[in-house]
Length: 127
Picture 1: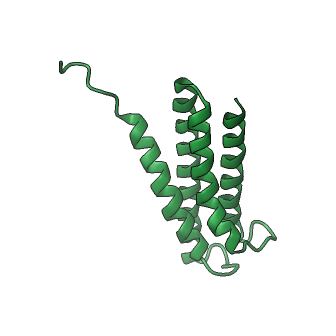
Picture 2: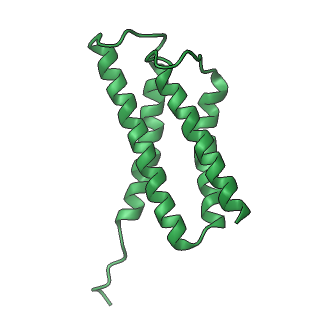
């Protein structure tokens, strides 16, 4: 049970780091993310999920995987929207858009892999 809660906490910290990496260049928050957030975003997200998977039951792991994958995909889509809005000059660039690209690629990849692994059930008809 302790690993489950530790995993959830690390996942939340990882997602928070990703949100800051997306929100800062869009001027939505007054913070300036440093290099540590770039490392902690995927590290905490992945480590948190591993701890969550070790400490949880299979039903908890499945529903948690779906939730984390969905949140990561939403974060990737928010990054993509931010890039489009910056490119269209709807939102003024508040610094480099490199963190938006980074979050879009990392969150998108992890989210797609997580969602795809849940979408495939073993074929029951072949035996």
